[in-house]
Image (cartoon, rainbow, N blue to C red):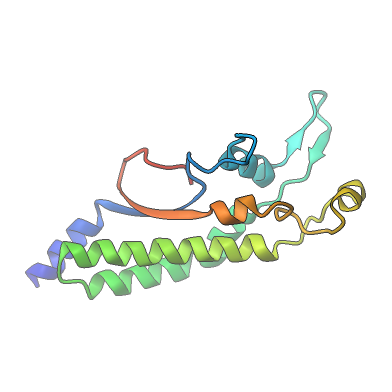
Length: 151
């Protein structure tokens, strides 16, 4: 019983995160996290016209997968008997989160690209032209309150 309480106490100090961290850059140095933010929320021109439609891959992944992540973490932490076990549990869930995010990016279709973008790229696959964002998805376990990454 004491081991279980200790595991839950330790679990409260940790956080599983997945996404695009500060070191993820395009070849020209542009931040992948910043680009994905623009993709997630869309962009507007200075006069307020829509430039790019929102492509909420991150939100869609969280909405569709959050329950699975929570259930998995609860099951893993409940079975943990040491701090090392709790850390590994969070690591497994963080990896699961990253995998789910990659799956969403790999299959994202709506809204599609503009006809001019399709013509320039040669295909209609939002978020996947260079695959840099897809390859940049990462995960880690951090101590709650740490500013270690960008999700």
